[in-house]
Amino acid sequence: MNIFQKIKKTIKDMSPKNIFRLTCAICFIFMVAGVINLHNAVSSLMPQEKVKVEPTTVNYTEFMKKVTAHELTKATILADRIEATEKSGTEIVLYHGRILTEPTLPKVMDEAGVEVSFPEEDAPGIGDYIGIIFAVLFPLSMMVFFVAAGTLLYPQIKEKFSASWMRIVPKTGVTFKDVAGQDAGKEELEEIVTFLKHPEKYSDTGARVPCGVLMIGPAGTGKTLLAEAVAGEAGVPFLACTGSDFSNKFVGVGRDRVEAMFKKARKFKKCIIFIDEFDSVARVRGASNSDVGREQDTTLNQLLTEMSGFGKRGNVVVIAASNRLDVLDPAAIRPGRFDRHVLIGLPDIKDREDILKVHTEDKIPLDKDVDLNVVARGTPGFSGAQLEMLCNEAAVLSSRRGSKLVTAADFESARDKVLMGLESKNKTTDQAERKLTAYHEAGHALLACANPHSDPVHQMTIMQRGTALGMMMRLPEKEKLSVTLAQLKADLDVVMAGRAAEEIVFGKEFVTSGAMSDIERATDIATNMVVNWGMSEAIGMRKIAQSPLGYGEIVDREIKAVLDGAYLRAIETLNSQRPALDAIAEALLERETLSGKEVRAIYKASLEPLAA
Ligand code: ADP
Ligand code: MG
Ligand code: ZN
Image 1 (cartoon, helix red, strand yellow):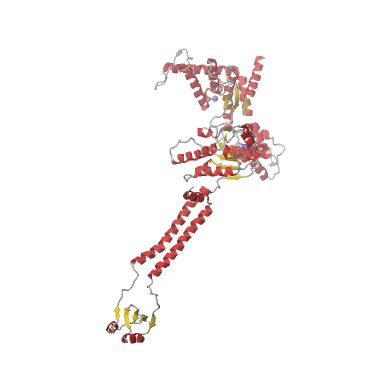
Image 2 (cartoon, protein in one colour):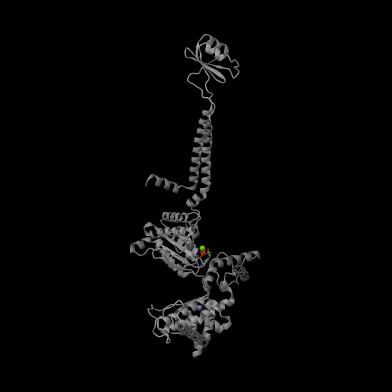
């Protein structure tokens, strides 16, 4: 390390206070230097005294006596005095104070053999004035410069070195008990807790060390809370920051902050780093060629570098939270980085009830008429944070009435109040839309149950996720390398059944735009069947390439025929098994999420009366 690096490092490690002090000290030195300089300049302006030997002051009479006695050799006539040298070498001076009006004196002295001279008056020259100006202006300007630079740079310096953006909690005191529901998330995070508690187990067995967990889910679903709980359960410090802390207006701050954060984290040996709003750091790199984009790239690069160096550098686990996975840079979610993904969804009825319990137990005294299950039923689409708000609001309302106990009516009014603030945001709370979504998803599910060639239903929900109002998910029982025509047909039927159910239940005029992604999916399958997989009789076993104008009329007609066929089959099946459709839709409206097992049970039960 050379001296410059050393100095750079020292300055970097200095606290803003010390930097400010240093600036002040430098200013002070300049001021002192300026004052000394000024003194010199001023004294240089003063008439220069020849202070070798102090000349003896004489009066006029004595002086004239010496002149006439030829005792003087030299005399210099100055404005206010005459300086003369005696033969013996002693200097004398006669002060006349400009009242010497005797013009004959030089002549008299000259005649007495004295060498008379009139030297130039030493008036201050222009150079002296420039000297003064410099002497005053230089330190002044230096002072102004340093103060200005100090004030200008102070915020940046502070940004750079202060850690106020980081929230450091030595003990969070939060445990998994404080987080209701989110069982899948907890299970995944349990491993992180184990790792932090017993890291040696991991290094002994050579098991892959967890280093990055990404939590994906809508706002207010308890992501921060869960991260705190991990730190609490493991008994390690919790370092929290937000993605936007790294997208600072000053260049390089993001990168430096990442570095600072990990430095701090490693000091703790074991700890959790929590990065909220992760998408604002980890957007796809190189996506924008702007300065902001490049700045973000370096920040993310730094983060990934710090993370890949883990294991060796202490047991630090990074937990990041974001509400969207799609915008994240794939490099960030590669193995060895944020490779563990935990989906945190909105709570369903049972979870909502648990969350309400967490936030009322020991905190809010409830009246006997309050049934949290009923409250949970009445709050579809609420997040954990909104439920907490609901509890607080209810408590406020009851205390306003002067009552000690919170009643069911309080919860009702509180819900209306919270809802009013959410109305526009929460579409699922619209009852008509919920019902339509329930039937749409039930249509998909029913066809999946009815057709033995379809993959079984895994889970379904009418809770809003992103832009989707609901979803029905199937899972193949085993990995498939090729698909049969029967399976493809079953897939098409299932996909078509959403819109078909809407039409059957609500009428042709009331179908919605909600089937957009279904249509896309179905068109993909049908197109592949016709042009790639030789499953259309009119086309036969031919591969059809797409021209700029499309596939051509015959192919388009074939695709439409395949789709129409599927739609008709879906309508038929739904009509013939209407009770099952109603049963699944009703169960969904009541419970919001259903597991595959539950769906199959409902389907079977509603078929039995038919069979009997
Ligand atoms: P996110 O980080 O996902 O936006 P937070 O963790 O900040 O959500 O949640 C905000 C608050 O909502 C929490 O402090 C907690 O009081 C409440 N909350 C959210 N989810 C839950 C839950 N599952 N159990 C208990 N409380 C919850
Ligand atoms: Mg949060
Ligand atoms: Zn659908």
